Image 1 (cartoon, helix red, strand yellow):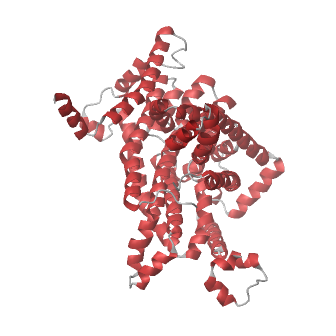
Image 2 (cartoon, chains in turn brown, purple; image 1 turned 180 degrees about the vertical axis):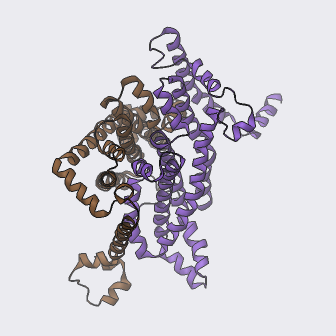
Image 3 (cartoon, one colour; image 1 turned 90 degrees about the vertical axis):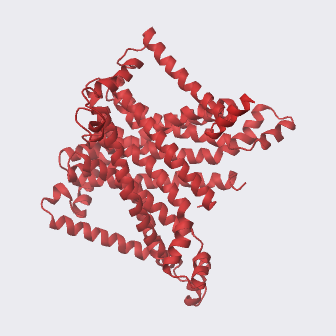
Length: 279
Length: 286
């Protein structure tokens, strides 16, 4: 119950049972303030776009943006762009995960090998994947392959690096304990290394996919592949600012959905389930 | 005696055996990669348009710096010192973005976090702003500010500010109420609560925010320079790629990595270590 965490509020409320628990929670967790902030922001936006000259170029009003979304939906463009972007992210980051996690674990198994590869992985992680885009464009031109390569690069190294760090951080005692009990190498990997590294794997995934999401948008802009990034970039070139803002809102919403319902629960659950952080 | 003395001298500069071993081991993959690169040039496996010779990448610095009159011209970002002025321009924007974005983010984050209800309301807004921040603002920024340094600075500031703001907000809200109340009971004022409770309590979270904002900000800056800039490393890479000068592109890419590693080593890692040592809060379940 929401009231249990706020005794002050419940004592003022009187009876324990609430008629509208959802509404109550909404009002007491800042929902009202959020609504005020949002409405105030929208009103300010509408006012500014009303006052400035040429609002359709510099800042179209909220209504225009919503109207442009109807237009895009009716033509079927928006769902297609969204789907293209998500598909690219899935392929690129999926490949990155498939390669990055085993790679990180393999490198982390041996102390010497992990000491050897730690700096170079850190270096590759430091090179922003998007910086490679011009090089890859020279190799393969403006193609689907180019964008996916950049996404793959962008999320592979943060994932591999974090997995390596996670494997290194597992206390030697656990490995030694299993070894004294006569466990095989495979057994050690399965029962100690993998669960022990899971929290870092989850953190690496979230970071890697976060970088990858931005790389998709930038890659689409620069390599000219149809998608949300391409949509806002081309819309800007033909002065359709309403479409730019619509695309930005879509990018934000999609990321929130992805982060809230996929990545964050994954991270929180693994940390709670396997977390060795409270050593 | 002699060996012991030299070991002591090494330790004084912070190079004990374990560290030396780690540096030596870490150098091996770099060395292998460089020799493979060099070998590729000799054997001609991949054409220079794919992988330019190592030597031409190094000499690209001198080509770009050709006609640079001296140190003063480097510092004032003279047109003839192309390479250093691109590097300095990117780094200067990072410095400016941090100098403005971090204090602003911490200040406003503290203000928003001090009121529970306002903090609750601002959290979803912060999530949304962080989700859009970075590269997605570039087209709109180009409309508003035109192509140039304002656009890139705006992108960087946007990324830095929202991440720092959001993490400060979360940090302040995560400070247990008891601490605040005990300071108030002991007769502390609002100022005491801010500087003795909120700020130290939120510090680990703030440092995480700064670290993340540097990571995301640097990437966003490079991308923004490519699309909407007229100076900086990202711009240099993009223009050079357009002219098929692969060696200049490689040079820029390498420097992007090197600059980030130096920043990470000299600023971010010590900052994080200091916070952990001083305030002893490594990680906090959300």
